[in-house]
Amino acid sequence: MTDSPGKKIVVTGATGNVGTSVVRRLSEDPQVGSVLGLARRIPDWSPPGVSWEAMDLSEDVDPVEAFRGADAVIHLAWRFQPARNPAVTWRSNVLGSVRVFEAVAEAGVPALIHASSVGAYSPGPDDRTVDESWPTHGWPEAAYTREKAYLERVLDTFERDHPETRVVRMRPAFLFKQEAASEQRRIFGGRMLPGPLLKPESLPVVPDIPGLRFQALHTEDAAEAYRLAALRDLRGAFNIAADPPLDAGVLGELFHSRTVRLPSAVARSGLAAAWALHLVPASPGLFDAVLRLPLMDCTRARTELGWAPRHTALEAVEEFLEGVRGGSGLETAPLQGHKVG
Image (cartoon, rainbow, N blue to C red; front, top):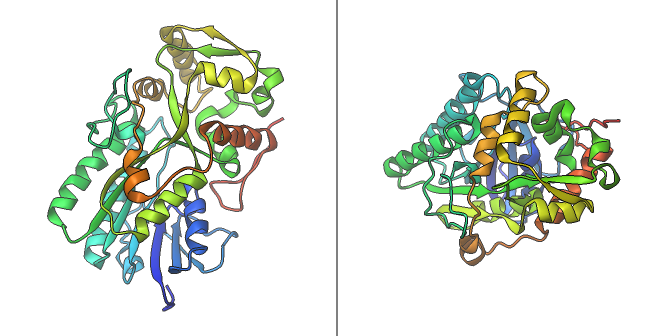
């Protein structure tokens, strides 16, 4: 990184859905002097004041030198796939994150901002939201939730052993933006989610699956929360999500479609069959986890972080749908656009 005035921030996973928005938001902040983006592949895209270094955290790499002199490390790097080979995602997500945490301590970085998730939470109540004190033991049958929960325990130990490091755990809802639509379709929908299917006129029915409700957030709003966390002297966990919570009724209105009750066992059986036939990349275990996610109370982010979303959850989903239909993307390897006929 250059010796420019202002904060020096390092961002891992800087070319993905969240990383590109965080890097862009930091590059626009006058308090930030320089941003170093770490990614497996250096992109053609680069905002002003941003430099890049190629680094694959799934390998046995040591990011200490990249972290030296930084005022904060924002750790976003994460692999969702291959879901069929959890040893690969564990090596990248868990062991890679542990190396990041150790390097933060060795380099003397004063702040670590870690991308946790709503998926880290234990199954929640149906009748109320939960704040950041809700247990974070995840759902054990899905690699994503299992790995996010495990890293919460790693950070518990890290904070005990390194009280001099300010640690923030960001726990966002599902994140959407137009530029990430093609990537998310590939990760979660595969061949079963063609673009034309997501046109309102092509989806006359929305399945109403008992227990299926979730929160969403525009990625740019999440990036603002990360920016604030990197620059303000705060610690601890922050839930971030936008209203309204999304269920079949809300999505039916979005698609101008009627809802039809579908038992969760039937939906899961269909997904399991598609999974077994390699038609979908998202596992039945992840479906089970989503059904059990709590709804988050975001009061702390609003009152202490000074954060509020600019987009509603519906606006975030609408952008995603538009992006899928149009094959939107960005000039980074994870966000390559791909229009589906």
